[in-house]
Length: 152
Image (tube, rainbow, N blue to C red; front, side, top):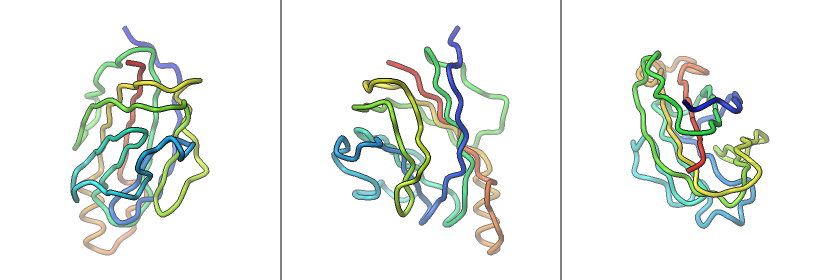
């Protein structure tokens, strides 16, 4: 059974319904965030060195937990996830940073080197964020993301 190696938690700013997570060294990203955005409404878009997330709200902060595992983790079905998706992220290095309108100071540490990483992304609070945004109310930290990474 896979073991959890590390867990980091972040508050990420969402703008225009999206945020990104990409290589810390931008020279390793063929198309940096926010260039070439994915189709509007697509929950997760993975490309070399970069992941784009579509949020249910326009402008707010979202809580993001990032876990690194020594193998594929068990699916977390203890929460009411509204969206879940899996894929593979290829990185040149072991550090990623969040992006909204600019680069975040927050660094996600996956490991000492790059390579292929399995990733599972789950999100909850999406319906509530959409409703609050429609009402013009504060939606900070309502939307939750869980990103689980493991070596492929």
